[in-house]
Image (cartoon, rainbow, N blue to C red):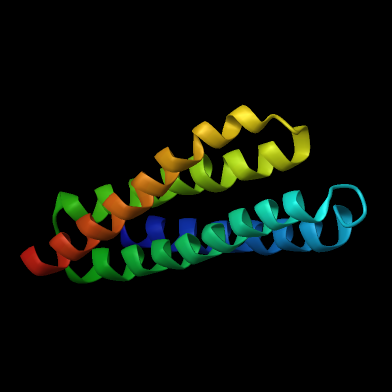
Length: 122
């Protein structure tokens, strides 16, 4: 699974960079400054957690156990829920999507806790 998580992190990072470029160049002048900031927050946490997936790949190569893999799935879920909801909110104007964002944040937090627990148990 180490290779899977490392590849997932690399792919997620590439997507995050592409979305960052889209936000900086494609959205400028199309959305207001507040919504551009919302999009940029999504990109920031997307890339942070793409790097976290690289850490999961490294951790999976070092310690065995289900906690490391669960952390990876939570980081992926967090990217989709947290960053994805912010991307969609910016692009569609559907503010109700902001209710989904905290679920992604919770997934990020739980992912970090499980990654630490997996390392301690390993």
